[in-house]
Image (tube, rainbow, N blue to C red):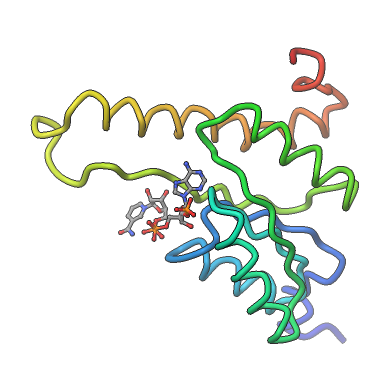
Length: 145
Ligand SMILES: NC(=O)c1ccc[n+]([C@@H]2O[C@H](COP(=O)([O-])OP(=O)(O)OC[C@H]3O[C@@H](n4cnc5c(N)ncnc54)[C@H](OP(=O)(O)O)[C@@H]3O)[C@@H](O)[C@H]2O)c1
């Protein structure tokens, strides 16, 4: 008989969590790893990713560090290539990483901060869409780059 825990068994699943080195992303990564997933710890800083992945491993959890700046298309492509080379699949995406250069009313936001935020948001949309496109058999990213 299946238990409630079995319903959330993520053994053999590969999960990518962006912005996984602190805050909400770290909490998501911890939960997924605790349920058995192999979690790819990603943020802009490789050292921070390695540190978090090492902590997970010390706790008996499965984690792999892979840095990626979500505002840089070439880094997103490289991330997918690394994931494909290492795992050949991606089951779960928590597309959480984001730059928040300004907190406050829009009339106080300078253009550079606004554009920095948009750049990251637009790029990470691609990260979100790519697995679906690949599942459809369309190697969209590689054909266009
Ligand atoms: N906290 C809130 O109250 C709140 C409310 C609404 C929405 N959100 C959203 O929830 C998400 C997480 O929020 P949080 O409060 O947990 O943020 P946080 O504590 O500031 O953590 C952000 C994470 O994203 C990474 N990151 C930042 N810019 C990145 C980039 N360009 N590419 C890749 N990774 C990047 C950071 O690591 P590095 O610095 O190493 O890159 C870090 O791991 C964000 O999308 C935020 O907009 C948060």
